[in-house]
Length: 201
Ligand code: SF4
Image (cartoon, rainbow, N blue to C red; front, side, top):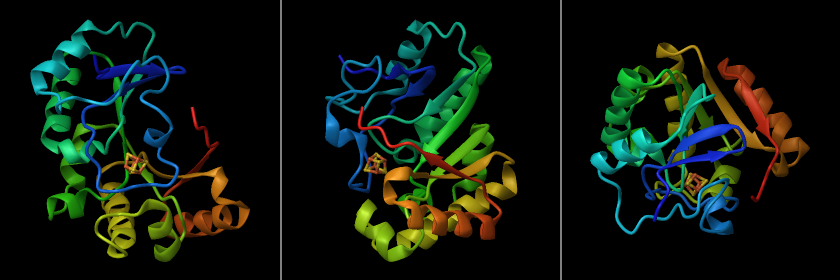
C-alpha cells in the first residue's frame, strides 16, 4: 500500500503524486521506494481526492504543527488536488501548510499559478538547486529545457508578492562556490536561501 501521509524525522509530508517533469540527479526517488516512516511512496495509480482525504483522516497528527506537500513527485503536477487538500485540511486541522516545489508550475500549467498556490499554503520553498541556467539544467534535467531556470526564479518572485514566507533551497553537496553564488542570487532577489544538508535517506 502506498503512503499518502508520512512522517520523516519530526515533519509530516503529503505525497499526492508521482508525476514530475524533472530528473534531478540527487532526487531522493533514485535511492529507494520510501523515506522516513513510509513503506512505499510509489503509487500504482495516482491517488484520488477521496483516497487522500481518507489517508489524512486516518493519520495521527498529534504534536504536529506543519504538513508539507512533498513526496515522490512534484505537488504542482496535481495542482487541483493540492488546492482541494489545503481547503480540506484547513477546515479540519490546526496545521500550517508548506509547499516544497521545483518552481516549474507555471510551465506545467502554461499560466501563472503563484497567487492560487500562495492562498493554499503558509510557506513556499522553491528548489533553486543551482545558481545559473546551464548548471541548473545539468542537475535538474527539466522537460522544458533552459527556460526552466528563469521560470523557476519568476515563480518564486511572484510568490513573494502574495506570501511573506517564500524561500529558496539548495543542497550543500553542490559545493561551496555554487552555494555562494546561489546566496548572491537569492539576496539579489530578496528571497532567503536555505542550504540543506544532503541526505540520501
Ligand atoms: S523536482 Fe523533486 S521529485 Fe522531481 S526529480 Fe527533482 S527532486 Fe525528484
